Amino acid sequence: MKQVFSFIFAAGFAVNAYSQTLLSDDFNSYNVGNLGTQGGWQRFGAGAAQAKIAEITAATYSKSLQFPRTSDVSMWIFKDLTTAWENRTPGNNILELKFDFYTGTGSGVTSMQMYNLTDDLNSIGFLEYDHATNEFYFYDDSETILDLFGQATENTWYNFTVRYNHATGAITISNGNNTYNYTGTPNKDIVEFDLFTGSETLTSAVDNIQINAVSEVTLAVNNTNKSTFNIYPNPATDVINIVSDKNLSTVSIYDAAGRIALQSSNNTINVENLAKGTYIVSIKYADGSVETKKIVKK
Image (cartoon, rainbow, N blue to C red; front, side, top):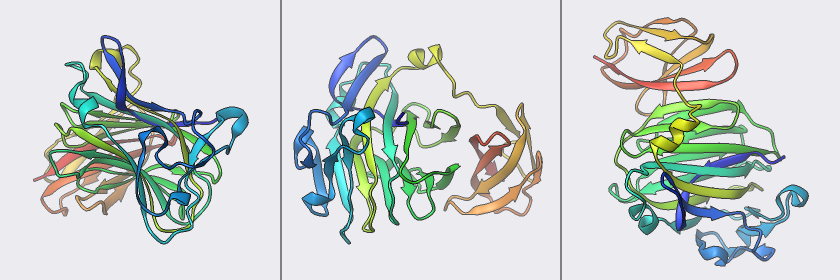
């Protein structure tokens, strides 16, 4: 069964009191061959033959959008979501993206990108797959690089859900087995959703893209994304203490540039030698799941 990687955006509305579908596309009504302008998708960069509607796993998924990349030019496939997001029901302030992602093979990168208006098309976040290392990464608006979920398998479908809380900046990434929590920048309005592929050779694909605007009331009914750990003191000067109801495997502390500043397997970590500033503490548990929190070093 194909696993799903989801971000949610809107082109038309399917509405209830607490949830709106902003964009939904399974590509099944499209003609096999070049994507072209089917479904209102736009393309920038590499030629038309680099984005195709294909039957990769036809028995399960029918048609999918594949990137049989052979060009040395990067490519963006995108849709404008400005009006859909602006017209959402008041209170539906969580942007949710869901989609299926097929790793394929290759040596380049494929990423799902959410761009925002106030920062002149800077990002709310990118979820990227590196075909050379077979790993997923998340980039926030300051280009912090966070390694997610461990190594993936070639020619395999994966399921993801990504949520961005417009009011708080909280970002949650889940692949059905593991959940990753991160605090980004609040009050970013979605204007565009992009599917990006680099200039190298690859064969990745996406399917079942859905972008929603939902409320916290909706998520509270089925909230599986609560953090299971706390860090104190925060801000910190010399040590931080990690309290969790799960067994820790590795604690990685990232600086603002996404570099690993410190690693440990202990619940108490000496941060005295870190420069003053903001850091991301990423905890990998013994069961393979990952969570993050932001700390300030004084």
